[in-house]
Amino acid sequence: MAPASLNIVCPIAQTPGGGKGPFVNTQDLSFGTAMGLCSGYLCKKLGKMFVLVAGLGFISLQLLANAGYINVNWGLIESKFTENFDLDKDGKVTAKDAKFGLNQIIEVLTRNFQFKTSFAGGFYIGFRYG
Image (cartoon, rainbow, N blue to C red; front, side, top):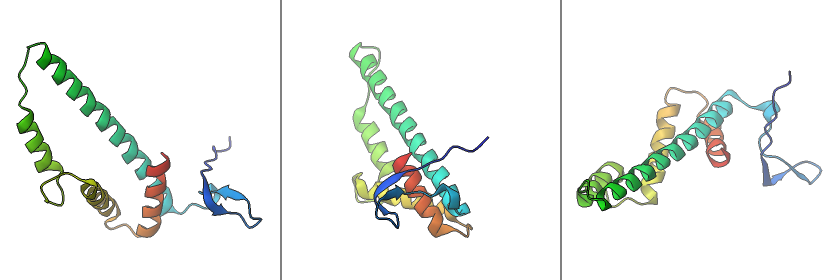
């Protein structure tokens, strides 16, 4: 049974004939690219799951608070959120914190790993198109 082909088309990638070709050539993937692709794909899916759980938790808390069952201290929750997710310690959670966190994740995943450059490229592709 032949493995399924993964062809991600990029408008910038050009084949020698001038036409658009696959962005990822699955016939010639290096080990680092393959591991990066898998890791990026997994991180994106876990991120979506985290957002789903956070949204569900927020809606549940709001429904219970509006029904009078609980009282939520949103100020405390916001301060704990900022304390944990303000990675560059500028006092607010911004896109810079997300970039900083992504760089930390890639550094942890590539520590003692020989194929860092191809891993980073594969991670980006897996995260972007996963």
